[in-house]
Length: 299
Image (tube, rainbow, N blue to C red):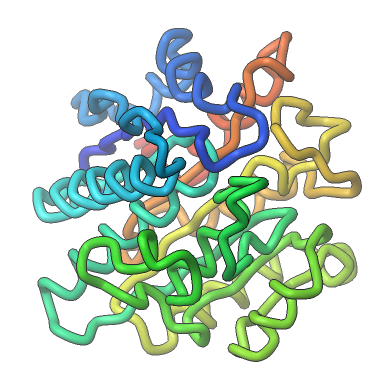
């Protein structure tokens, strides 16, 4: 990005996931310096203190996650206001509620009614609108929450409900979903690029089209990458692997032309599970994906 400080925000959340190991992902990436070379020559990159949810109470995980996503939204909005570029490293994908609520709040502060576009790269839809207290898999809900259809405790973060309009959102790489969430997105009119279409047209063509789609009527856009969008044969370090995913090289190639895009407001990479990544293969993928967008071009 053109001389914008890259503010790396770790989010050690796993209350929303079935496997809690993803909460350790940000700290592993930080401890082993996987993102340290994002800093340009002038050293404009920094890790914030890692955000952690408060302890779960008898009321369940929702209050703790609501608090954490509000703190994350505040942090993201603060960095944008200071002219920095937020790079959010989760944790489970429920952190997206805070990330994109914060970006939207920042855009609205610059111009009331400003809209945010979002490219959601994921094997799943994450669009269950009804919270199941038995499963407590809130990482199945964040996109629904951002669209104003999720748990009420999570759908009004940063006084921006809904955060997203359906026509400003694209999903890419979907290949595992349930009919209820598919029906919701179909009814809303959200554009979905299923994995079959990505295979047929190529990731680069799909991503360029998605960018045009989410930029049509918005003040800026973001990219949220769930690592399970990648093929687990190549990238094992995820909590919910789904076969037949994207290859690292093709996603890097697709993202690279967006480097320096001034309309890009933030990047989010989530669901890194170090317990499933003994050789740090997927940690390296996090590094490579981030560098494809954020590493400064050589002079």
